[in-house]
Image 1 (cartoon, rainbow, N blue to C red):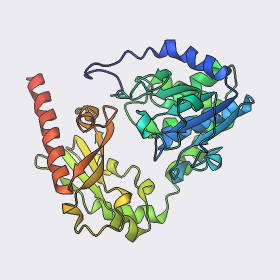
Image 2: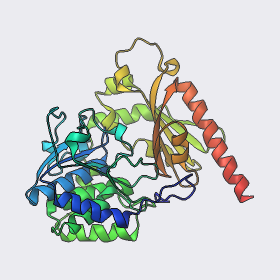
Image 3: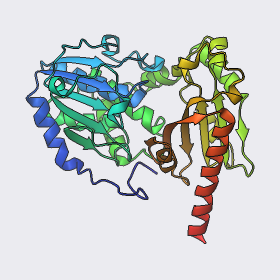
Length: 356
């Protein structure tokens, strides 16, 4: 299923059709714009931000794109990626600040300007669980990717979509539809993709750049991570673990592990996959074996659609989509496996009861 509010307690009525004109008006009146996104950006967050930045620059605006973390290796070819800054001066001022795919203001970088310096704060998102942190919240849980929203904004600004913007929007949609394989692939995203091809996007070139130029270190890390694969009794939950020792041994990093969790979800009979990633700030720790180490593990979830993993992530302070979500849980690796197995079992029992 795509990211809709079905089954979400106290789901907000985002009214995207009413908020789109507000975003367009705010950007029309802005001369200096900051585009930012959640930390450790993925293809949707980065692609949508770069697409909007490219269009605004073409319209004569001064645009700064900010994220403090390394950009994903397979999206660095996008136009403007080499201009993303990792710090902002404390005296920077903007007429508008746009956050893409962020879910919450707490997921943005530490140099985010305060209210007096950031101008109109625009939140562009499609997560069910996003917080209304913007002055304008253009949130559409039915959109396949934030890039689809950016496409509408650019057209609303009366600007033709350039090839630079088109490639970044296409990358955004590729990322969040799994290359047009996930259930989020809908007529709107395909119509948008068709327009992007008309703007000059070469789908084979994009596929090669995004999926078929993987660093050797990534493949070595994947081999190690698959060695941690565990399938819980009953075969409905599969888990993977990524430790700093693995990354060190393979000469790899967090950004090279994107998509590993899909290998666990692809196992026949598995309904939910969970991936536990040791935070990089633990690197060099002498805490002993990872299995007993208590720390704030990053947990990613992927579902085949039966289980709403966003509702599970919310229980631990996280969020996301029905089929893809994440959170941070403090504990040992062993405790995490127990927590998650219990929640998945409860979710499946609840679904079974509803169907009986």
